[in-house]
Image (cartoon, rainbow, N blue to C red; front, side, top):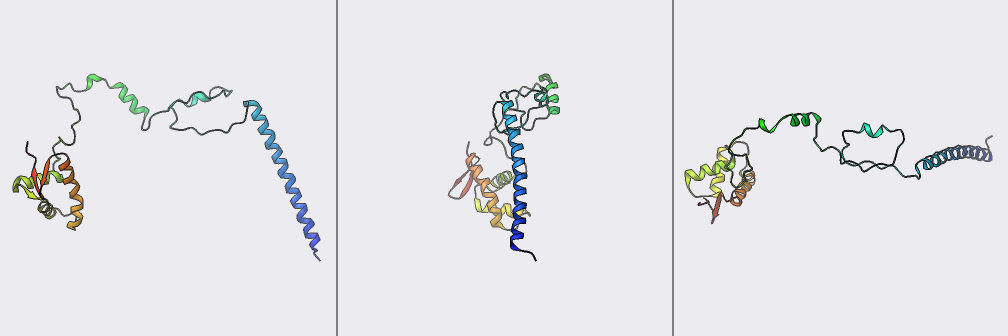
Length: 183
């Protein structure tokens, strides 16, 4: 018959054997750590690099001994492609058209509205009807479109257009009636 003392002694033997195996493994790890710290002058955990790797990564592995790391290069910029860089390097300034006018940036407030945009539709309604309340303009635009089914949702889409037009001084709202800005 199995005795409790027999079970206990078997479990103790198994635990003692596992303890010996773990202590051997720990001593091996300590020896390796000691050897590495004596070679590098001290134990320091390896830090992960930040940013994108530079293109010339292979040259850093060329030397067999590993000296102290130099100052890290910032790496290549995001979106950089060697093919694109080669194309840009081969194009010269003479290939660009030499026009009298430069294509400088035009601020949003000075730009005419795109064809078919909501702002252009507002302008057409104001040109045909003269000064009109903003609610009537929105109703007219709602009748001419098919995408949005509810006028409440359509108003939520159009009000920012009016706000931008007021801010950029294309339109003026006087007492709920929308006018063109007088030059």
